[in-house]
Length: 67
Image (tube, rainbow, N blue to C red):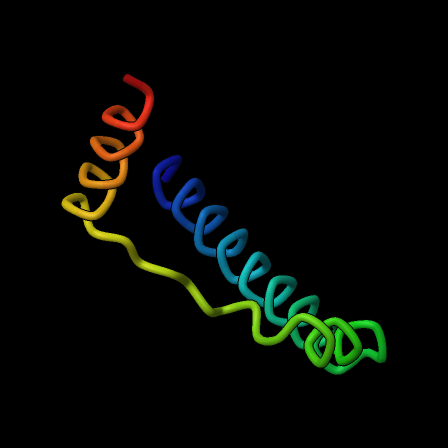
């Protein structure tokens, strides 16, 4: 009985989290400030990926330049 109650609380809190997260995100995206930020700074989902080899190569070049 106790585990069922705890499980229902967890499920309820997760559903509440999803509803609030979606509402806030949707509200910000549709607001004037959200649209202004999107037009001035571009999409926020753009992520630059850099490989480990590129990072190591850049560090080695900086280390060689310091000598």
